[in-house]
Length: 293
Image (cartoon, rainbow, N blue to C red):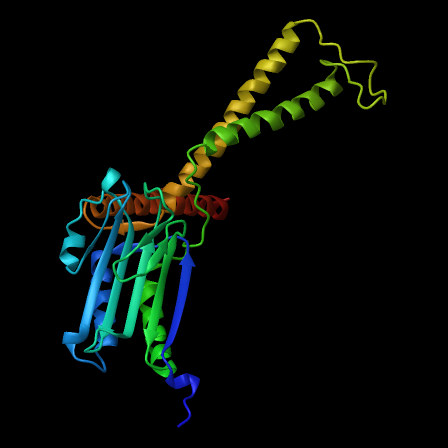
């Protein structure tokens, strides 16, 4: 009897880099959907669900109880950066028949290795940030049905800004300040050549000027240099402010469990208030002002 590829065990793995939001309600719904998908053709005794939790300080543990995960403090060094749901259907001999694995990963774990392995043998690349899943089923048609239903559920964890770039490098403000200072210095020098504060220079033997001679320290020069420095500081601070503001208005990945759930709710209310009172209110004011002229 010939066997077609459709009747062989099929597996698929997909990942979606970017921001996500996990809350308790959607997490429970996801687990319920996974149970329903895997139990459609098997009995409940053969279903095994394992949860993997990775914390920022490098600690990782596994549990079969979702309530243990929901009781995590999820703050500071105990912040959850990796959350995995691994559901498997095993036969009487312990062989894997069907399986669904969903993972959420954000930030860095304080571990020597870039890989973390579950007791089930699945390894995770800790450099990947985003959400993803792995599916194994007995045939292709069944696997495709699981994919369609799982994709619909995972849409609840993503937002319209999920792929918006996130600036989390702590050295970015210093880099932006240095870049702004460098650019401002160049522009400043080019500008003062035309107003006569600094003489032109000689480059590669071509006479742009006789040679570079630093001018005497005058009030005009001091004022120009001081103004250039202030301008560089302002530009650097504005870049840092804009970046930090965008990261605040457009939240990073959130696992709204424990302490982070309360923090996220407060930030969400504040963002909504700012949006409606300042942004929308400002636009309405501008429109009214234009119409009344």
